[in-house]
Image (tube, rainbow, N blue to C red; front, side, top):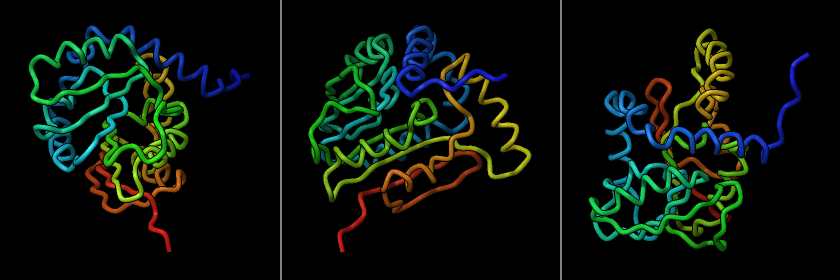
Length: 213
């Protein structure tokens, strides 16, 4: 008999522990993916960020160097140790950011606070991604934007099934899933996709709150 699924709070706690454990080596562990195009995609996405910015899953601060000079950034992460690494990078980047330990599923900000919300390679690790995406819609102003870079479940049937199998191991060992369907989750969270770029398993998404009729 398979074990009963954890609730989202318990699952997120497990994920947080994994990222705390990996924080010291995370940049080394993630370096091959950065060299294979993730860094370029991050830079292009972050160039679109304007106004007051909320970055969720700021991690070790990989994105901090890519914001435009003068950007007002608030970064959150569930892992205190990842945030410690991000704070250490603050001395070498031009942007000033407030870094806060918080969960995207329950953001500690008022409605309509930010002009832009950013998430890069985050929603593969969030226990309830639809809840988290909905929170982004809540804290972004009605005329604001949500910028996402995510890897998703392959559309090929065989590769999709393989991703489902691999996801069990990656969740237990590293804390992320390989089979998230982020485009569908964005829609399920009540957001409107304005622009999407598809490149293999990668999706670059610009979303917003639906326009009032």
